[in-house]
Length: 242
Image 1 (cartoon, rainbow, N blue to C red):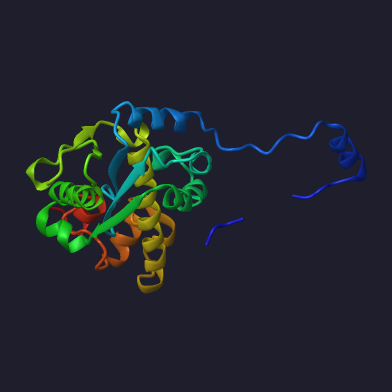
Image 2 (image 1 turned 30 degrees about the vertical axis):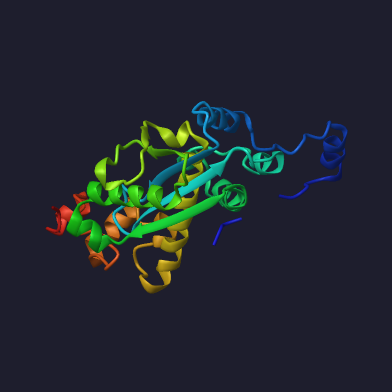
């Protein structure tokens, strides 16, 4: 579903040929190296990271992911594949799609969990988010692993010892990798949901608040993928706000 120049004159083409060819820009691995260093400062062979996508959307599930990296087995090939790894919000959709299989190839273990709109409405967004992150860390942890969650302490709901890292998806390679997995998984789901739920442009907005999405809600109401408890301006107009 991705959207997609031509030579003009012979003289222009000849002029172009005289210029030195520019090398294809490759992903900058410098930030990724910093992310690896952050994880390795703990001195653990295994580092597990958890992050979520869809926390602030109007429609669709909250998706959390956990990624376990084995720094004793993370070779040069895997590190090169992860060049450009960063907080998924800093990457384009195309960059995230490139990184997705690279994370799967580099990680020792990957888990994903999703929480539907109904569950978010009944339990509350924050509690749902914490439970999803805790579930991912519990399923991904191995003995001796350093477990990291993005931003939040998960409390007793998480059975493994862990550390909350503020802005972790921009600091830790394991959390950044989890953010890519969660974001790509959720976006793919929402784009597929367009077929069954036409009218809200889920293929374009993937459930987030955009002018077009809010206008659609005001005109045709909400779908079963929408969160009724979310205090959106458009929801308030329809007297559906919390």
